[in-house]
Image 1 (cartoon, rainbow, N blue to C red):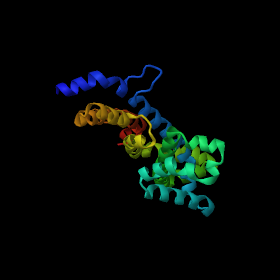
Image 2 (cartoon, one colour; image 1 turned 120 degrees about the vertical axis):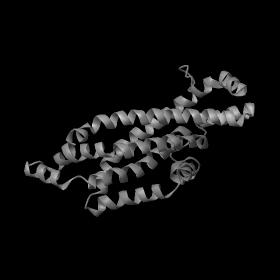
Image 3 (cartoon, rainbow, N blue to C red; image 1 turned 30 degrees about the vertical axis):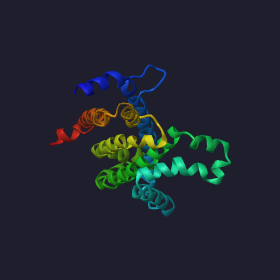
Length: 239
C-alpha cells in the first residue's frame, strides 16, 4: 500500500492534472472520447435513416460500411489507419492527407469515429424500424410530410428508446480509447505504461489506470441513468 501511495504522490499529475499547457492522460482520454462520440453521433443519425431506406443505392453502401467495421477489430482498424494509410500512394503524395494521417490524434479519432458509427447506425436503425406503425399512421393522417414525420416523431422517439443501448456504446468507446497508445497518443494507459517503465510497479501503475477508467464509467452510467429517467418519464406516468 505504501508503494501505491508513493506512486500516486509522485505521478498523480501525469494521470489527472492539467496545468493548461501539457494535457494529462485523463484530459486526453476525455477529449478523444467526446470528439469521437460527437462526430460519430451526428453522422450516424442521417446514415441510420439511409440504412432503413427502401432505396438500394442508399441502403447497401451503409450496410457494407457497418458490416466491415463491425466485423473487424478496432485494433486492426487503428493499425491500418495509423500505420497503413500513410503508405498509400495518393495519400503519401497529397500534402494535406499526408499531414492528417501523420498525426496520431487524427488517426485515433478517425478510427474511433468510424467504429462507433458502425455500431450506432445499426442501433439507431433498429429502433427506427420498431417505431409503432400506429404513430406513423396518425402523423400521416394529420397531413405531415415524410420529413416532418422523421423530424418530429421517428427521430425523437428513437433517441429516447435507444438511450439504454447507447449508454453501453459510450462505455465501450471509453474502454476503446485505451488503444490510443498504439498511435502514441498519451492517454491514461500510455501514462500508466510510462510510469510502469520508470517504477516497475506494474500492479499499481496499471491499477491506477483501471481505477480511473472505472470511475469514468460509473460517472457516465450515472449521467445516462439521470438522462433516461428524464427522457422516459412519460412511460412511468402511463403505467
